Length: 110
Image (cartoon, rainbow, N blue to C red; front, side):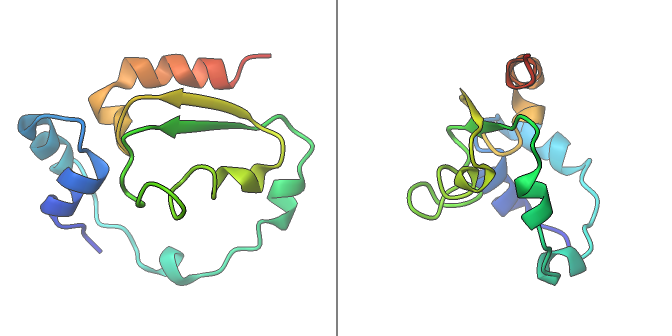
């Protein structure tokens, strides 16, 4: 499946200018649909005794903000975790790769 550009621009890369949105969209590859419908058993993953971090981008609107958003609904599944927040969209790796790298270092400290 291929996401339409308009959805990519508004829901996934809403913190970038139009040129960056177009150039990054041109780099995307179609994704298989099967992973969207296969159910995964993640109980073992969630129970791993390793430190966990959650990186939250405040302008990520790929899911609606609030009750159905990424945080805290998704992050709470991790149990105890380090919360790392930064401004940016779902695809902050395109719009702010240096800032993302810095936050990944914070998320992985100790």
